[in-house]
View 1 (cartoon, rainbow, N blue to C red):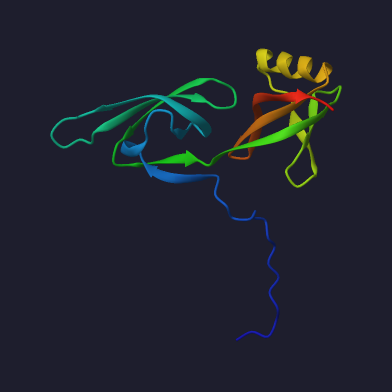
View 2: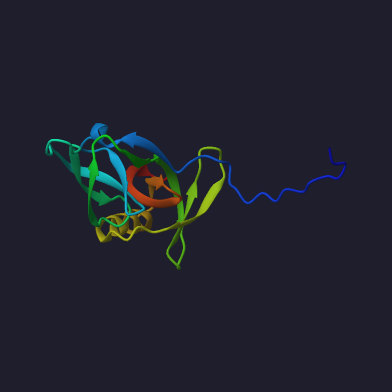
Length: 160
């Protein structure tokens, strides 16, 4: 055995995986799937039976949950697909900066300042107008595979 100490450089994160495997045949409409490295919500699934020795195949039509692009994939139903861990968290809106970032209040009282305003024009105007009117707004933030984006807005009444 060696007496010298070994130095290990840690280049890994906490080890929590961004995705988990799930059999393609068990993924349903409104579920989530990773297609071309993007987290997507499934809008259509069709399963086809194949010939004598082939696999049944699942045809997925899905929409990217962050940019709204439509993606398609065909996978044998017995194979595993990556499914993203999708979390949705509500935060209270504190401030909107000039450069398009929002300041949000977390549950433990800290602020979260690393999110941009959404690119969806309808949601963007709702947030800006509500904030300008001095309403208390709660935004829902969807996070998956290391990305986060504001996806919904709730009005909890005027500020006191």
